[in-house]
Image (cartoon, rainbow, N blue to C red):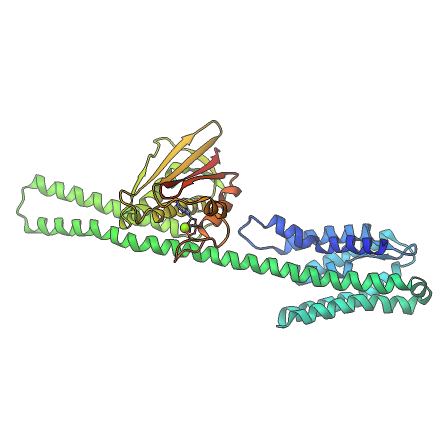
Amino acid sequence: MSEIKNILLQLLFALSPFVVYNIFYRNLEINYSRRFILITCSFCLILSMIFASSTAAGFIFDVRYVIIFFGILFGGVLSGFILLGEFIAFRMYIGGAGTLDALIIQAITFPLSLLLGSLYHKMRKKHIITFIAGISFSFIPLIALYISQPNYVVSYFSFNILVMPVQNSLGIWLLITLFNKSVSDKEFYLKHIQNEKVEAINQVAASLAHEVRNPLTTVLGFLKLIRANRFEREKTERFIDISIEEIHRTEQILSDYLSISKPPISIQQQIDLVRQLTTVVEVMTPYANMNNVSLESEIPSSPILIFGSPTEIKQVLVNFIKNAIEACTDIPKARVGITFHVQLQRVQLLIEDNGVGMDHDQLSRLGSIYYSTKSTGTGLGLTYSYQAIRSMNGTVTVESEPRSGTIFTISLPLA
Ligand code: ADP
Ligand code: MG
């Protein structure tokens, strides 16, 4: 019974990097770093050695091979050596009759880990390497121990033959498969998020081209009139003024668009929400016009300062406004409204539409990855936006009624 307890405890330590990864990287838009692997492995290694199971004084059994091998696989060779150093130092500090054996076994298993680690990255059938590692780390220590201390191995035979192989094989197999699964899910998600942004920007770009043509046509018409030279000076000047204004407006739309289509850089800084929203509304207006939706925003005259990344907040606003526009494309007198409410420490941004709305079931699935009711939807816009808002310590609430409309309320702390 106590052996099973020990095995379970050690498996918990072996799985800790996977668990910590899932907690820590859950809301981050990046994948794990080597430093993360090294730090978690260092902790797990120490914990697993402190709470190791032991039969005779000086002999301890933990998941060191699992953690060091995992450290090499995902943290690189340097992490492996640092973990090795940590292991040697701590094992010598614990001391006891098994110390020398432990170091000798490590002298065999560590180079083997390096070799298997490099094979793992080259081979296609990675589970074979995982299997070989599990078997090697179970039986190499056992055989080495038998050679140097046969009496010890025989007197605790059942423990040695059960605990070591189960702990190591199961530990390696579970940790590597689960961790790989999480990492590839994350990679898949990050890639899709990127595609979703490109998709949203492409759709907006199509309507933008249309919007840019109008002022150009106006300016062209004026230039022709001026060239014909049939007007008095005052009127000609008026034409020139209008043309300059139109060109400025076009330039503004284009530069706003460029600032949105830039890849997001997650640099947190103090930003003016009003300015970001103005930019986004400029860019989204053509998209609204194309869909026969009137986009109305009540933009305050004074700045509202929040803390966040400008590109991220713009992407979030684009996502919500785009959804609102898309929700009312087939509605007569379609309208999307944006309003601000500043309270004590927070600002609330309301994005309201009179579109199709959502029922209870749809509302409960909102923000889940890949949930979309549109034929060309990706179901990633809100997933991304919810995460970004959460990372700014903000919240999102939604009220919706089928066939009558939706209100999204984004609440963010003021800087
Ligand atoms: P996508 O827009 O690609 O479908 P999103 O994550 O942006 O993905 O939105 C997910 C789903 O949430 C949409 O497909 C839609 O069903 C619903 N939704 C989002 N915003 C609104 C809204 N303003 N009105 C009605 N439904 C909405
Ligand atoms: Mg969307």
